[in-house]
Amino acid sequence: MANTIISVNNLVKHYGQFQAVKGISFDVFEGEIFGLLGPNGAGKSTTLEIIETLREKTSGTVTVDGYDLDKQPQAIKNIIGVQLQTSGYYPGLNLLQLIELFCGLYNRDVDPMVLLDMVNLKDKAKSKVKELSGGQRQRFSVATTLINDPRIIFLDEPTTGLDPQARRSLWELISKIRDRGTTVIITTHYMDEAEYLCDRVAIIDAGKIIGLDTPDKMIDNLVASGFERPKEMKMANLEDVFIHLTGHSLRED
Image 1 (cartoon, one colour):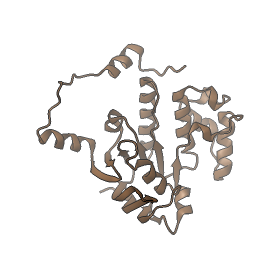
Image 2: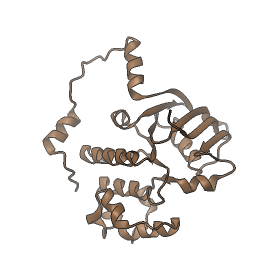
Image 3: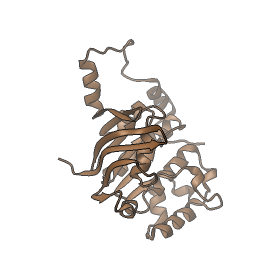
């Protein structure tokens, strides 16, 4: 049985009279990719931001790798990596300089070129973030979460707006990060992405968890309930056709 690295118990978050999170509980196991799924406004991002120590909770308990969120928030910050949006980077610095800056902030000694090579951006070391394609920006954003050698990384809709090749390239990167032993928490609106990447998923709606299991188990349970698709699925989809015709190698503008 895998060790529990994040434990959330009866988490509640109110904004005035509005209840964004309504007493949810779940565990995340060490070394897994765990997905938080749900429609806009369901409470996914609020839940993540509370675990990341970025937002205060109303009540409940959160433990991250044995650290209590209420008593040891700085210890939690030291072991997690949080994906930044593009707007969070200094526009005048290139990728090499940005990594060196973050290394200084984290007091870490990391070879920037090794990190850039890991996310297939070594040839873009002297480029600024604004000069990168969408997929390249997202890969760099993921790279910055790894600078402090975190035990856990949080990725909030990392492939939104990317073309199919860039999406699949990022899937491969996320899987590679998990294979290194890092626990990954991800939110996404793409169900194919969650099915491909996630070991387990929690589906949140209106501030409550309404389902939690492996994607395969959830699908099997739905089929067992008598559910049938209105249209028979083929062995491939249009995205597979696109990738097959354009090639699996990453090409970005």
